[in-house]
Length: 149
Image (cartoon, rainbow, N blue to C red; front, top):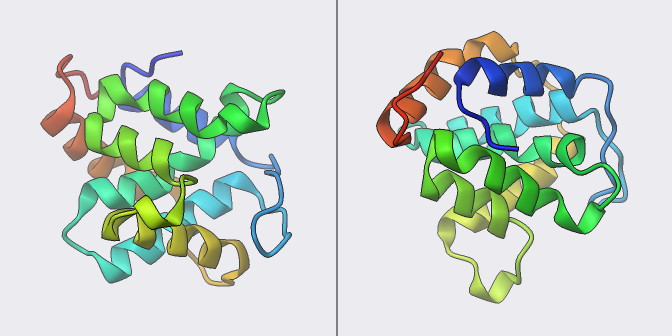
């Protein structure tokens, strides 16, 4: 599946509500929707100007919806789905989020850290609609399709 509009992506992110992921390093299962919001919010705090990193934190959670039966392909499926809309960097960050730590750059380390913190963080991360403008900005910058609606 390739996402071709921010609206399609928003629908998929809304569909994450109530879906639990596989346990993370802390062996906790989280609601994918809330986890996506918290991961993105944590990245916004540490890298307020890096919209692509924040968006990678937001969209990394869609993998289980795209490939529910194959836990080992969640990152690949999510990365492939967002590439046409959000560009190579967001796709790479989503895909490589679970790769070997010794090969990780600072962006991947930040994403991993926010991913794990977002599993145990208990704070109001806002609502998905707060991210629409950021998604549209990144899509407009990176999408060869130029589609944001």
